[in-house]
Image (cartoon, rainbow, N blue to C red; front, side, top):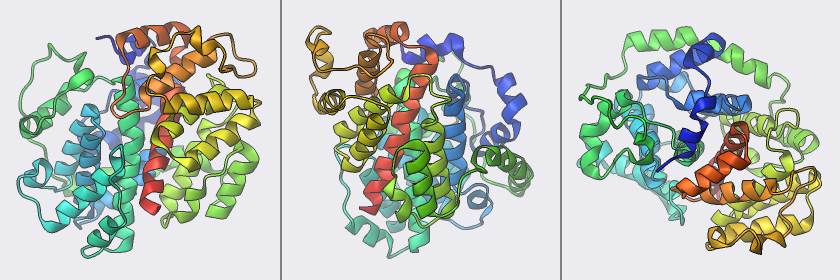
Length: 421
């Protein structure tokens, strides 16, 4: 089955070019999971997408501090990342997070479920409840975990699950091809639990597979992480130096400059993910870098918000759409589309009346964005070969990446909003 990734492949950016611009960031990722992931080459098709990804991962994982720490928190974060990826049915992320968890010291028994402590099971329950749709979230889950961990540590675990909301959505929606090195690291352990490469295996079906031993963190890794950290931070600072630091000021900045309010910023205890999230919104709602158009982008977000029933995200989408001149009829139509499971079965003629048209958008463009959003909003995504082909014809590669990145940002917010509810 052709995937979006296959249609986008000719526009991917070579890893050599990425190394020239973002070398320290790529080196850190290689240290963390043993490979530079193919997702980088897709995200850079829309450069703000690559920046969003690199604002998300280090800030929500508290890198490099969390990895160079000698405690068990990093293993619990890795286990939560893996669990949430399985709950979201993202085979790409499940492979990488399994490797991440093992490298940070999680046991094979904790990962495959054959031998978990009470604490590990509580971490798994938290991650599953935050990542599952429909939700299984209950505040008592945090109370249970609180018998073992501090509130600060619990929030870092929740931030790691939130981060995976971004990664799970993007990798699954695009069907980023899974690297054979990642398969070799983890397949023997997790294939018996029902994991398979799925649509992410479209490129590597003929590659030679061999079991490899995943290394556990060492002093050498810590030294390499610390060496690359300042260089990566310097790159990130170029994207964030204009942003304020406090939650009230960040919310004010986003209202004044990006036409949205993000209330969850005021709930976050840790400064790094709080500021990282604000920077992700800043990048995604910058009118000078948008390829798809901020009106259509807001409507795509409304489809996702409506599908998962997140009232706060619907408010974000309404605000952004209204600020960019989208008619109330189109806003209402996008919300209705998200709630309509039969939407993909309706003909273009039936959809001509709801007003799927943003100002300045070409005829049919808004509807193509809405259809793409509806297909990638569920977990797992439901991108058919027909949808992939139609999307590639109607939208540019940069537009496809931009829509997928935006919905991925919203899924991150949806998960952490659930945690704070």
